[in-house]
Length: 121
Image 1 (cartoon, rainbow, N blue to C red):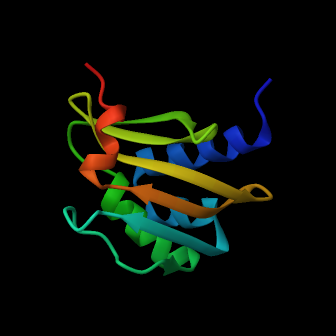
Image 2: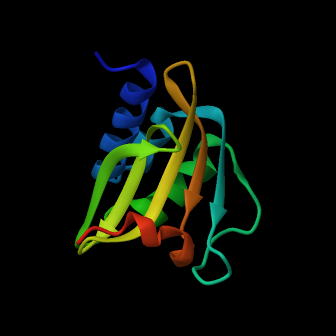
């Protein structure tokens, strides 16, 4: 039996796979926040992004519709999260916090140095 958190993350992953900003926004809490870590190497917002509309747009750019990528639900910091890979090479890992049945906070790691342990062979 899956825990509710995993169901929320899987629903968000489905919205990401569709790549529709409206579907992403519907999966987010109205006060959603996204915090990105590009490590100064990968372009990413330096400050948290606030609000379902802005977070949905950010996620659409960072995680959705990227050719040749695979988005999977995996354990991130001990809970369900997301991993985005291209040819087995991790390009993003996302920890997720929820409020009720919606995503409230996304911690998006894009820093290649921090993603090395996420690569698949």
